Amino acid sequence: MKILIIKLSSFGDIIQCFPVASGLLKKFLSAKIDWVTYDNYRELFEYQPSISRVFTIPHYSSCGMVESLVQIIKLIRTLQKERYDMVLDLQGLFRSGIICGFSGAKRKIGPWNGREGSLFFYKERIMPPPPPAQERYLEFLRYLGIQPDPYAFQLPLLPPILDIKDYIVVHPYSRWPSKIWPWRNYQALTLRLPQFHFVFVGIGPWFPVNEANCTDLRGKLPLGKLIALLGNAKAMISGDSGPAHLAAALGCPTLVMFGPTDAAESRPIGRKVFVLQSDVSCSPCWHANCLNKESPLQCLSGITVELIVKKLMILLEN
Image (cartoon, rainbow, N blue to C red; front, side, top):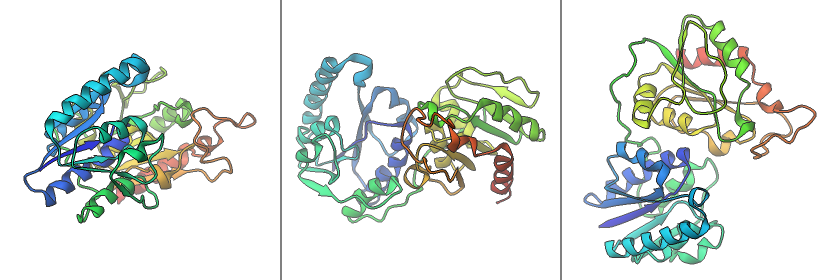
């Protein structure tokens, strides 16, 4: 049995799809499972034992539409030689749909709510259940008669990379400016909790991290090191971001702040996750840049340092 999963992006969504791969192996014990994704997510699969082979294509933003189409055509030719028994399109967009449709697989399965015309490339269609988002992916397993385990991420616990005890990882960045908690709040947070050591990670706008109980690893960690750091952390604090999903999947106690996005839809999945979202009329707005000119980022500014301290202590005690 040869199975292909298509999930091109993004970081957090791909992690939430990993239980689909491990679930397939519960029923198809000797199956060979391959995956198609964008090339900047390839490293994620180096730590995923359920996946045999990863095929990648460049994102059109990095190479242009024409080159992106050329790469998709090359990929389709390669996939047709593999003679897959089944393809699951977990993305549901035009690029994933066309890869699924011309893959040459016997069964081509995708979601009923596929966008950009992807619906026409499937032979079998799955009705997506209500949120959270991971349920849409797990429904593929139920359709195939498999009882899913939402926590079966199969990510490894790697040896620690820091000789520090009881550290808390902080990821203050996001691709959306509207998801970023004001950096001064992070500084105030570290001063309020001198008994803990804070390790800052991620890539984004620079701000000073000078407190004695802080280590600055921003922009310095490859994915394997980040997995090791999060897997051995006491907790993580983050906005709605890919590393927050990774921490939750690793079983790290994770505190996530939601502003323009909806926690009910896109919260990280894990046994030790606590989400915070302000009750303001404009949230969730799903805008990368805040449109509230009178009170910018009201959704995140309502999450105070005091509230984070309180919820963090509860998370750690539990």
